[in-house]
Length: 391
Image 1 (cartoon, rainbow, N blue to C red):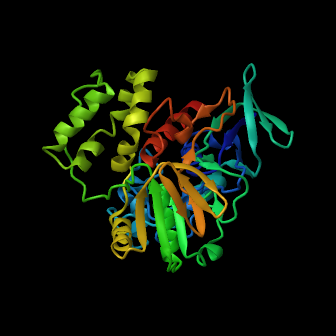
Image 2: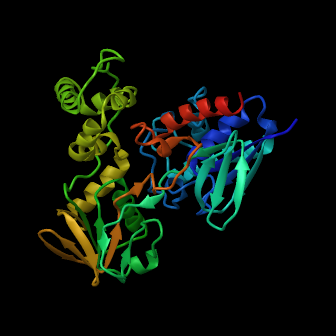
Image 3: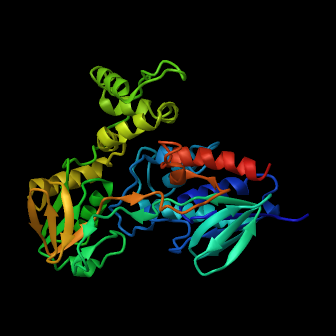
């Protein structure tokens, strides 16, 4: 029997979850898979490549299984390593779990890992053509775009600036530890990761976090289950109506539970909105949604609060205009001088390349879906894609 061929573009967690689901289906041995990742972070991606013990999952172990039909798989695995289902496990530990799933997949399927940048794909009559940055092209029966964080979102930089890093996952920590003041552009989870990395490495200087709103991610509390205020799958809510209902429900329940109860409805709501409604939400409400939806583990929140209380860490509200030599951060209302500046604005999910004919999973679906970057959604997508490919 001729093997089906599959290309997976992106080698991080989305790719691993898809491979794990494929390996469990009948016909897996008749599938030949090439996994492409331009950075060579196979099985980890950016999020799970960290070496820092203080970088924790922002979801409890109970919700991090790779498998849609075995939602206790990770929590049982974690318990053998001293963690409970309620724990926020170190991300590097989760990387070890993903590696085990990847190794198990490779034991039953033909999988090759290729460190190469894919420029785009093109639909042929019954196949997909991949074009690589080195001029190589290859045809596959299926292609899946599983890219995650593809490009850092960067402020404007005036020329080459010594002491500035545009990618927080590609920095010189030894050099940073010598800086008296480190400025972080952003106050979201990426910036919090950088604060934790500096703290874990014994940094003694000052850290300044800069953002327009000056808002840190909220902290998790013990989970509380409530019924969602969404009464049916056909209920239409504009962004304003949704905000009104959230606020009304939050007067009666912990707001954390209100947001969590929306989880299964957010993609349905997103699909109902037209482009103006989506733009309105992203312009006016997305920052506040992210602060409340994507929360910090309690241990992380405690560390950050202790650093704020000691004045080692400071948060300043400014609209950043650019970064210039010094390094100095130019803001609309002044300048911030530092010995080192790190861009922590997060990452884009799309870099403007054409991937025609590709199936998609995880962050690559953002825009079509809204809630599509976390493991519970990605594993459900992986199960569906595996059924499609090996049907």
